[in-house]
Length: 136
Image 1 (cartoon, one colour):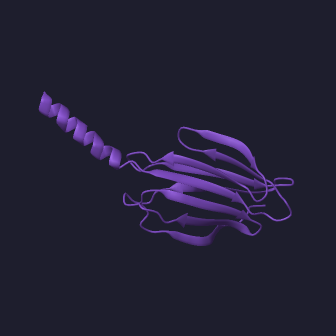
Image 2: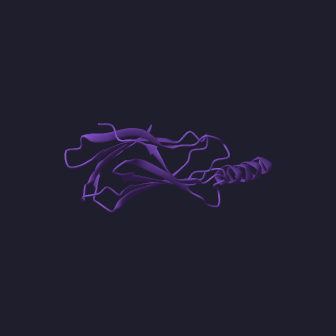
Image 3: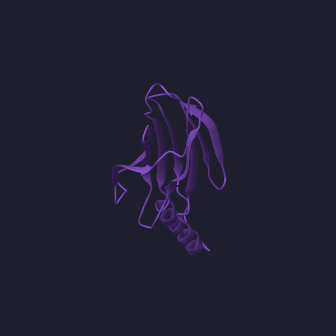
């Protein structure tokens, strides 16, 4: 019984090592002091809606599940009439080697940009580039 307890303890420590933290940042870099409306969906949660004022950001820090299937979808709309919008996957791991990191999304007049910051557990950083256009 003692050997089983020791094994389970060591096994649980190894499993905890495979659960990493990650984060999403949505920054409002729109011109003309426009606000950014956002709502976030995952399998278990709905966050928002929230209004992100001009030149500010919203940040969500979370843990990646053991199976690396953590997924977040966002809807962004820009003021004044919230006509321009985009629905997109804001966080999804593409391999077991990917360990999260900070996914830095920036809403600008011509579209939505992504930068995935490098960190201790990030093998492939993504440099700032345009990913989505606004839908009218």
